[in-house]
Amino acid sequence: MSRQLYPKQFIPLTGESSLFQQTIQRLEGMGCHAPIVVCNNEHRFMAAEQLRQAGVEQGCVMLEPMARNTAPAIAVAALQAMEDSKDAVLLVLPADHLIHDEAAFHAAIQDGVKATASGALITFGVVPDRPETGYGYIRQGAVAEINGLQGSLYAVDAFVEKPDQKTAQDYIVSGEYLWNSGMFMFRAADYLADLKVHAPEIYEACVLAFERRSKDLDFVRLDKDAFAVSPGNSIDYAVMEKTSRAMVLPLRAGWNDVGSWHSLWDAESIETEDNVTIGDVMAEDCRGCYINANHRLVAAVGMNDYVIVETADAVLVTPRGRSQDVRKIVDQLKDAERDEIMLHRKVYRPWGAYEGIDSADRFQVKRITVKPGQSLSLQMHHHRAEHWIIVRGTARITRDDEVYMLSENESTYIPIGARHRLENPGMIPLEMIEVQSGAYLGEDDIVRFEDNYGRKGSS
Image 1 (cartoon, rainbow, N blue to C red):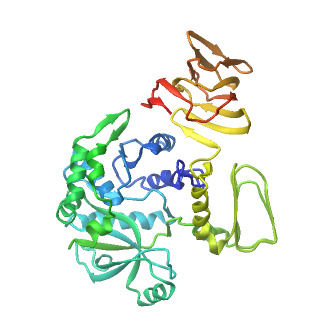
Image 2: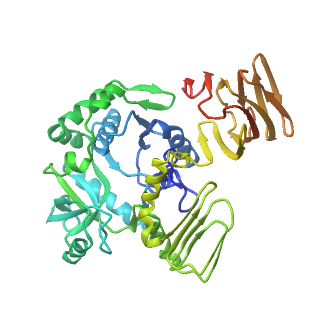
Image 3: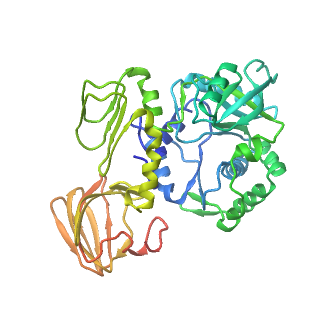
């Protein structure tokens, strides 16, 4: 379900909201400012659209020119936060976690606010309920006495890499270790000060990239050349393992990082105590299964402790205990250069989405949905013609020098080489069936002349 251009953060794995939306929604009532979102260029419109759908005020969406790990990402967010307030406190959250006990999570955040007032750099350590080899660990040090938090805040003694099974068991028995959640809290100025001392190359590159930033629609683009100079490093290695101000807050809030289908079953089966089924599923004599049907009926008989996931273009079947091994299939897909590694049949665009329905030699059929008030780029194709049939809503069509309207059950033809544009001037989504025909039907056969979303030239 998670593809390179549609990662798990943006997927509604539990309920109607995506993990990204849930991350922000669970902060309601905490008095937080509008979120600062750090993502890459390919995900910018998806992040903005999901914020809009969730009714969340869009604060700032910052675009990384390339991946440089968490220390630089948090640094540019800290610089952005300090534009509004020199005393800004950052709550740093990965966008792909589940938290079941929001009240406990809120209480931990409130304790974190108290601790940051003293200059502490807080990491949230999850109290483990089992030996786990898939997580890093934090070893608690001495009890910290800060702002009345005695007994609920500890110095960080050490960050520990993912252990083997026996070592993980020893950690649980000792009671001194917490799972490293990857969530942090500190004053932006304090983080930047320690970053400057312990990782000056990262600090200098991020300051320069931020100073040279540019505005692109509702997004902030960091300077590519400056950001590229930054070493790629995590906040743990760059700052938290070196600073004298690192503190850990134990967290008991039903946390899950959704690292595998097994972990998702584990989180969801708290209520079901047996099978977790999503979509059109029929299960007979099945126990301990996670079955997710996206597009059609999935029937299972006599399956115990299995994961079955169906999408429009792929089906996964694996014993639940081996769900981490899905990465080996991903490696095979990469080696074979399969399209499935990048995207689903349904592909999201800033103006809406398109979904592949059928294809063969010299033709393919797509379902295209355009959001109200949005439009595709003014474009042309060298190798394909297109037939458009409107099935819902109203379309404004540009074809070379012509501009005309089409309603439901009407159609038009776009010849090879014609400049064309599709717009939705209405108040409801526009749905259209597109039949492409020609010698080459790849998505890279697009020459853009005008675009509302800053995409230029050939695709």
